[in-house]
Image (cartoon, rainbow, N blue to C red; front, top):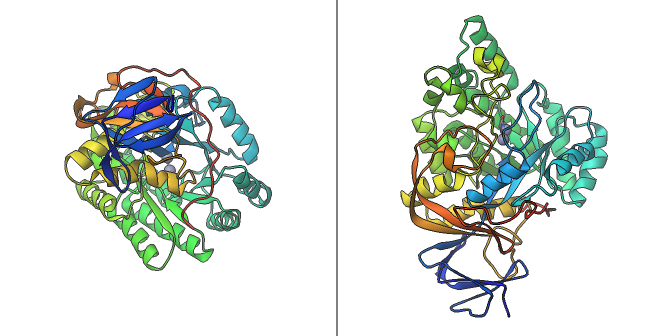
Amino acid sequence: MPFDTIIRNGTVVTASDTFRCDVGIRDGRIAAMAESLTDAPEIIDASGLYVMPGGIDSHVHIAQPSGDGIVMADDFASGTLSAAFGGNTTIMPFCLQEKGMTLREALKVYHAKADGECYVDVSFHIIVSDPTSYVLGQELPALVEDGYTSIKVFMTYENLRLRDDEILATLDSARTSGALVMVHCENEDAIRFLIGRHEANGELAPKYHATSRPVAAEREATHRALSLAEIVDTPIVIVHVSNREAMEEIQRARGRGSKVAGETCPQYLMLTADDLDATELEGAKFVCSPPPRDRESQIACWEGLQNGTFDLFSSDHCPFRYDDDTGKLNEKGKRNFRWIPNGIPGVETRLPILFSEGVAKGRIDLNRFVALSSTNHAKLYGLYPRKGTIAIGSDADIALWDPNKSVVITNDILHHGADYTPYEGLEVTGWPVRVMVRGKTVTDGDERVAAKGAGNYLERGRSSLK
Ligand code: DUC
Ligand code: ZN
Ligand code: ZN
């Protein structure tokens, strides 16, 4: 038999083209694409379906220590299963270096959490919170050689933030090592000042999370990150951009010749700060950073997806349970917004939302959908063309999409560990009805088919952004 599996009668969509052909899979990779293929023990009829590269979600938090009795709602099993049901075949969670740890120690902890547990392929970005000279001079260059080719730095959160000199040193090391740096841009000092003022005024409800982290705090930090990167001539990714002013900083930096990638997320298209002002404590369900803004910001973010300001559409899946001591409504979080853990679930809903609100509503075309949800992630994070496209020789990481399937998103149809979705009741058109990782079906849309451990850890090459 020339193939293990043939996907027949589907319409293949890549970041550049849409065409009718059959796809032959052998040994986990795409072995043939032709008008008509025969001869395989498994024939999948994809009539009426799109055959797309599986989603790559390059911004996901799973089982990340969050301090103070707070526990993330997903481990690697539930997080990757949820990812698969949402049309993804690879996710990139963060491996947190806690202060005092080496990067290798942090990786050891994360590999122990992930190994043998995953349903889709995974690869870690390392959060650098303690950029010692050993970390930057010795570890990072060696880790890049070992396939850990991206890091994240924070400009906010007291225990994570780097000062400007530390950011410069980290960027400088990343340039010589060949690592790509993702930056969380919010001005910690301004935020702490505003949190303090809210507290002094007795303003403690979830909605004050949004006003304590205003657009100016994000815009300023974005400008500073871009300036620091320019000073040491290092490419960066500005992650989870929420508004037009931060987008304009990216555009201006590109105009000066800087190498910058931009990312936005579903929450900045679908939610606003008003969602944090729900009755009782329900607003806690929408607490994430940067916070959702306003309608105009949603429009701006759609424009950014259309005009190339954004290269990446990621979930920033960062799930906490709502009605739970270890989650949003922990004892302190019930009384003061500053203790509500930041982050919302979204790995399973990212692609249906982009498909429905983007493709079905005519804001972006199918090829842009694939670029934003898969191909650009593979290119920027060193996985292309092994991942992120449908081509001969690429891994057979495939999502079959029914463009007409209409689904009302409710938490009980999702597979994550959170007890809510921020998108409860949202009706979407278009849904992944089969997801295959390296040629093996993980979900058929309704049921899990693969066993735990079907997902591999991926070493990556260098970024296309250089
Ligand atoms: N930053 C993230 O990237 N994710 C969740 C919380 C945060 O601040
Ligand atoms: Zn962040
Ligand atoms: Zn994040």
